[in-house]
Length: 381
Image (tube, rainbow, N blue to C red):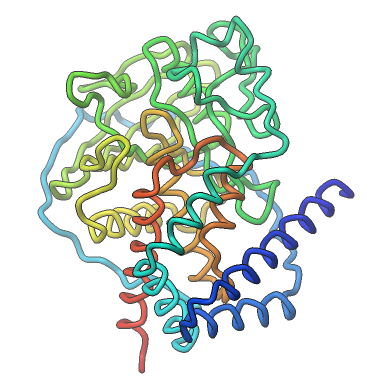
């Protein structure tokens, strides 16, 4: 408890220092000043919230083992009715945050300074001893993208195909370290697919967010870890493709039955696959990604298990998605203190290189601004 308290104090201190630096940059923008004042007021009046206890029943979705397995079905849907996002954000806060974000995007010097500070940020602790073990090196898609020891996902070695507890995957927490919000991981390799499904099973994840194509320009970015038709077996996990729905040109949704052959228990897992996000780049459409995110969260609503997010390396596109989602979730819950750089540093404390380029960081700011604008339009004036 003492270690956690010290860590939170350090993060609080860093956030206050960052806000102070931004407020004294001399840009003279009133929207920025109002926003920083709002953040300070929020810090002074902040109260600790007691997290809800984790109930095992809410972490997993199970179906009867006697459920009839139907052939895989595919369909195409050109559009779908979007529910308005639930939010506790008030109009005045929304306008101040929106003005701040838009000013941030217009001020290239400030953006450059902030990205430079984030890029030079060093996580502590940052040991990757387990990932560098000789027996685990072949399980890493990239030699320079490794999970930190303190935040890595640990598999049950007794249930593992190679009696190992290692997978290149990291827990990403928001405010409660006991309940990770995400698991960020690399795209599975041919010899790590069974590990991937073991992780999904053991962590109770029922939603997978896939942000990469299987290959790009002739380069493999992710091994297909699901059957194209019917069922495939990965060690003790049987994966059955139930359906595949193409919602639009940008993304599709697949539904799987995941069965543990040792326990005969079956769960439903939904994969949301975003198709138009090139590696080391950003989507052409902010709206498409925001629509995709809303659909993911609509499916996930009410659950307390981590969402599994992956691209190819589990940090560039995955980090960008998590940054956008984490900030917007905070705002939907009524947060009045939003610091994108501090939030990204918090994420980078848990997995290296999250959000790999300045373009991705700028895209995150633009996505948050666009969603806030959409929320304000939907609020009663």
